[in-house]
Image 1: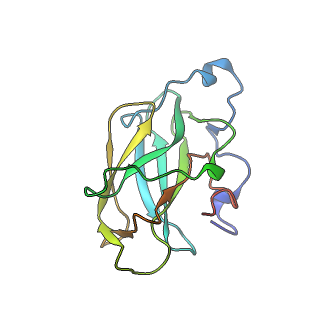
Image 2: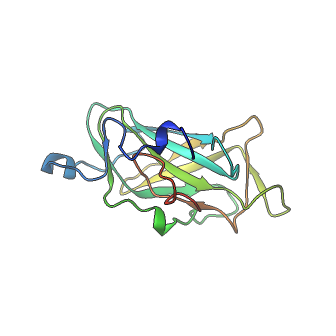
Length: 166
């Protein structure tokens, strides 16, 4: 996301941190799909081949998002969408009550191709916990994904220019 967007800031939003300052935050339990609300939105600018996953802590306690979301877009492709190493933050994201975290997800290279498959909903599993969330794809007709091109970024307290460009 570029220019003027609230998520461009180098400062994490209130409640989210990359490097917990106190031992209690460092020992925060992993977030489960019951701890967070996960939704997907289309990226607000080019390239339009990405979506943004947002996980918002809906509990009254802190929890930790480990690494990246494990995403399965298609029933016919049982493997998880691979993670992009350069998007990995210095430390896991610890969410306090009400705090969000973000992961950028690449769907395809560009445009409509014969390899693209339509998706209206997909599953997300949080690393280090059990359970699976079903996430509605953004847009009236859903999204088109290309298994040869898809990739996911790591959870971060903000979307960062450069590290999230993939």
